[in-house]
Amino acid sequence: MNSMQIDCEAVRRILTGFIDNEVRKAGFARVILGLSGGVDSALAAYLAAEALGAEQVTALLMPYRTSNPESAAHAALVVKALGIQSLSVDITPMVDAYFGLFPDADTMRRGNKMARERMTILFDHSARLNALVLGTSNKTELLLGYGTLYGDMASALNPLGDLYKTQVRQLARHLGIPPVIVEKQPSADLWVGQTDEAELGFTYEEVDRVLYLLVDCRYEVPDLVTQGAFSEEFVRAVYRKVQGSQYKRRLPVIAKISARTIDRDFRYPRDWGR
Amino acid sequence: MRRSRVAVAQIAPVLGDVHKNLALHERVAREAIAQAANLLIFPELSLTGYFLKDQVPSVALTEGAALLDPLRGLSQRIAMVVGFVEEGSGHRFHNAAAYLEGGEVRHIHRKVYLPTYGIFDEQRYLAAGGAVRAFETALGRLAILICEDMWHPAAAGIAAWDGAEILICPSASPGRGPGAGQPFQNASTWERVVRAYGDLFTCYVLYANRVGYEDGACFWGGSEVVGPTGETVEKAAYLEEALVVAELDPGALRRARIANPLLRDERLELTQRELARILRLRERAAGGQVD
Image 1 (cartoon, each protein chain N blue to C red):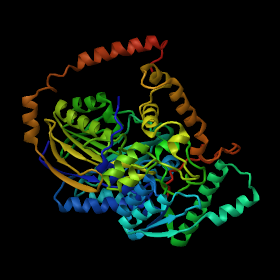
Image 2: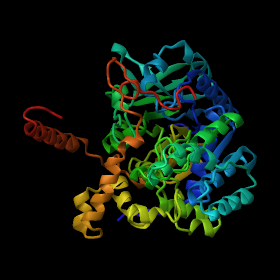
Image 3: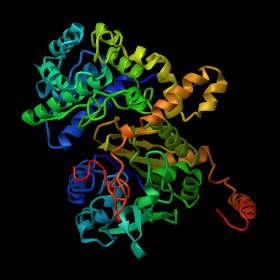
Image 4: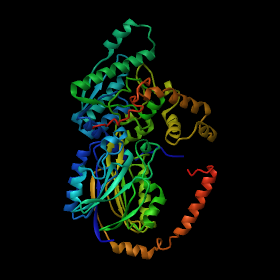
């Protein structure tokens, strides 16, 4: 079977080149990102600081009252190691004020609201600082739909969206990101005790292998099941998540009326005129 | 062929901006002239950028376009291969490469194999060329194949059997698949292909690949001058702009063809006979239609 190993030094060059190129083409010099204390946003910050210079990167820490204090400590580690600007904005007052109106809201609604609250703050500071919002969603999350639409999935450019979680970790180790960040249990930290793997029901190691074979190597579901390396139930569950979240990876569907409809038969590159 | 000095321009064109790219071509041509080169190769669609999509008609030029005049002028001092979108007869748009020499366009190759799979969508926007030809120049007999054309060995074979001593490949290859030693997996395949063609067709291969990013896709560079025994004569770095200069030695070509007289021993009548048979079989299988 194929390997998910990446040549970390080559990927580092490609991604720092990507950030530099896309930011400058858009007429900007700076980026801003939400720093959660996790490995994805830490890696995005490291790449951006290398690509643009630490002085061109601003990190926003946006804790909620139930956030794990470790998250802020780990984000502070990244800020210190890179020497980037940072700002902390507590989202508790806004989120709690809103759910004062809807006290029965479940954890999913609350989690999504927090992710979207953070997004509005990021984009507001993006305008204030003339900085593009740097995305931090990895390929595993994007494929599984494990993210909040218009929340943490919103960005202007995303250097990590074609790297699986296990590849994010490879690259993070290569860049010397503190092991305490790279090796800890991944968590969206939207409620106390939440971990990604408990919520998803499988480990990133397992799911990345299945996604890599299905998506990158174009195996069909029955191919993987008959090989016996994975249970049918697991492979089908992964496939359903990918299929079920397709809408999150596309613009909203537009009813076709005209001769040329946006993104259907009106097709220009995103870098049009850049 | 004559002894010559070739420059391969590994540039990052601006997507959709022909004027900016023209200025870039002029600047690079002057630099190549300063380095005493007499042949300069630009990458695929060097005047327009690659992932044009609906911009194709907006950036297209005819062979006689006044916009090419500065390059025609410079070709009095250095021959060059330039990539552009050609608006041909019947408003068909081609992914084309022009050979300019002595103040005029001497040959145009129109990409024959338009990739339309994976990251590529060329057949949606472009018309396929219908010919692979070697052509005589002041420097020797050349042939041009654009990018995907090279992945069809028959096209390279036709160029070689038609007498090409120098096979020129302008390319815009977006990197795909994590590489090991190269930035991407497809880079290593490309390197095998261009070196094998040098070896098998005992000719020089000039591979000009671009760099830069378009919509997040990264063109990996690594342009290469391959000699007629398949050895790398010069190679550009990956991922960065470069101008690599190499000497093309007719003596090396002669020695390669003495050591490996593969072209002498080619049996084109056998190839033709077998191709005719395969075509007949396909025709029969398709119910009278050749696919």
